Length: 238
Image 1 (cartoon, rainbow, N blue to C red):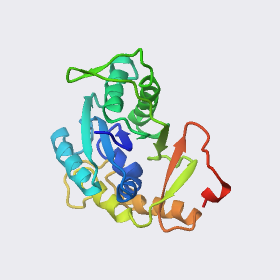
Image 2 (spheres, helix red, strand yellow):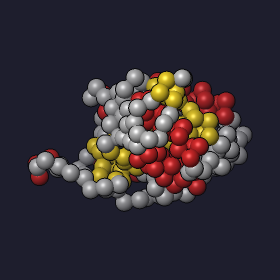
Image 3 (cartoon, one colour):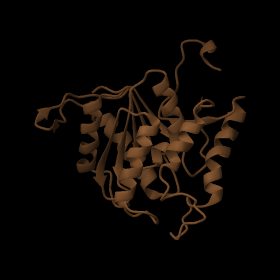
Image 4 (cartoon, rainbow, N blue to C red):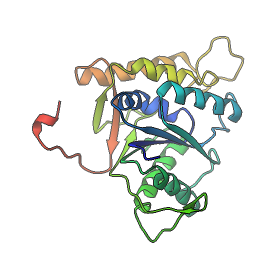
């Protein structure tokens, strides 16, 4: 299955939190979108890997993505080496996306920055024909995405561009809250984590509102780029 967009996240819920509304918008425009989670989030303070598996499936259904896979890398301990790069290359060649979305380049959780660099490197390497991979016994051909964008997570990194997601914010919130083991619940007996506070839950909306304010929209999501953005005309900019 060829996808238009493939979004990678170090943990289940990274993609929803970082670019869930953008994904929902692109799907509404007819794009085929998939998600690949690098780990099962098994080191998370709350819930369990099995619970996160179920929550990720529920969130994927809410977003309407075509496919979701998990590479089962070790949460907290995966590294940017040949073994891990090859597994991501297999996913890129399998789905042949034009655009890849991945973790923030720098963030509070060490897996976010690691995951960002790992996926970015794999996107380049995937285009080298002398790197040979097979998937389910079938030889894969080289494929390099045209664009790699990094969504914004915990830190308020200055975006290089933002996407107006005013009509899709509720879908994002619903997808995020599918991970009900992870986020604020006043009746939960689980330990408190930085993302399990009322403030964090509210920040999902108010941070998107603030980015929206800057472009005269209700809500927006921001991204950083690896190379200059190009437009055909000044009129392409809003």
